[in-house]
Amino acid sequence: QVQLVESGGGLVQAGGSLRLSCAGSGFTFRNYAMGWFRQAPGKEREFVAAIKRTGGSTYYSDSVKGRFTISRDNAKSTMYLQMNSLKPEDTAVYYCAADDAGRGSALANYYDYWGQGTQVTVSS
Image 1: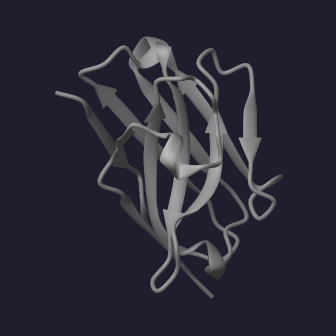
Image 2: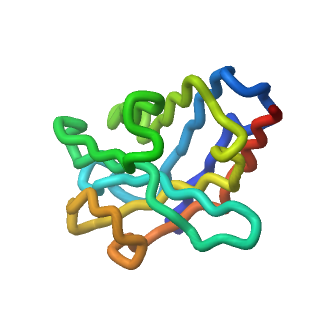
């Protein structure tokens, strides 16, 4: 069955870095656009970044642009999110998602499959 498994979350001080990974299985990873979303306590899930099938096109929310980098390795069926200059407001559960239409959208309802999430906590 389709699985998306996030890893790499943790506790980091403000200004630090983390690298999240999302491993896909049970589907043809290279045929899917992929995205990262996050949800902080008491808030709605929000778009973070997306990447199209070949990795040639990437998209970011304004809040992370210039600090986060999304990438993918289709040979490993894995997507990454390099997060630098982390801020306390980046604290959230981070989810990866897959879109079989390849859109690379910021809209969560365009994504077909979701992971269980990984917690990122940034202390001040």
